[in-house]
Image (tube, rainbow, N blue to C red; front, side):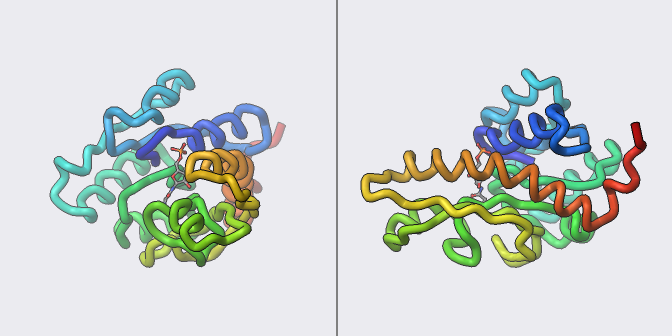
Length: 192
Ligand code: GAR
């Protein structure tokens, strides 16, 4: 699931294709037709479904439509790779322990929108990123993997975001692996 540039989406696809993650990305869901993730999916040959939240009456309805898409594709595990909508119990209940989010701060610090700007405003010297299982409370839930990123004196939101992104691309596939391992999904993989 993506709403933005889709660099984390691509990192997960790359990790699968390079053999670091024994999985296939079978589908992308976006909520904006013009988001960068759509172009990446096209280039990578991954089918994309657009669910424009502005045309769907409620968050629950949006999540219900997402669940229908993923059920039709036989999805085992769902990754929110820059998904900028608050999710509901509808999605969480459909994928217990199987719904992963990536957030650009060391949670539980700086939850919510514009986490990188929040960290800069607070003048922290170390920030980072967190991959975690999703709960109803926004940017909460059991942490799977974190990476620390030093904040440099001259950092702008853009320069810090760039370094945080590099770490996100590393830890998100790792978090998927950790979650899949805990669920016993890897044992179900055909050998050979
Ligand atoms: C990432 O930095 C991700 O942590 C953040 O959106 C960015 C998406 O980048 N997600 C959140 O802030 C969710 N609360 P991308 O589209 O290039 O993957």
